[in-house]
Image 1 (cartoon, one colour):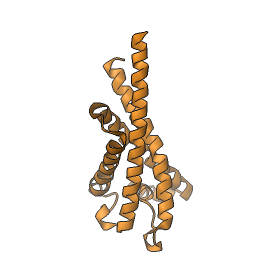
Image 2: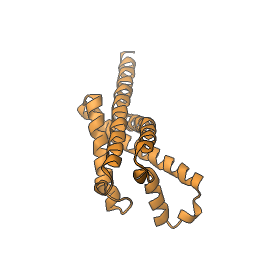
Image 3: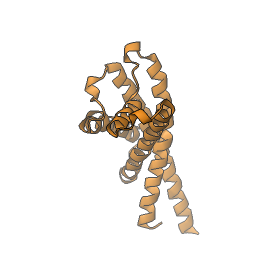
Image 4: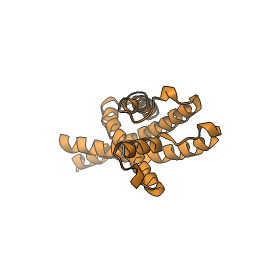
Length: 170
């Protein structure tokens, strides 16, 4: 593989792994959300984010509940894919153990998003203003996402590497 193909392949691997890793994360979030005390069961961040963005765009009154749900899933899985694409080149360059690298990256995504980016853009209150149990839920969800991401990226990069080695031997 040439360098450009390699970079493209690695980004695609990360995006696909991030997309796939968002599924168990989402299931965990939904299950644990039901376990929160009633006063803490307000919408989860992906829904809150879409609500705020549609309000900022002036279209919130044009988005019904089913469209809001679809936009929420699209945004949530899209963000998982986009951030997964960021992880794969790092994993390729530094070769962290999948569980460690993925979980640290997941925690980094949580920190950067919920303590930095989203509050700075006026989209969501910082995590420090949410109840501890909700933060624990979201941190746990990001660790699940990160570990799944790390394992998938490791497996897919090994597959690409072994196929590339077979082609070179042929």
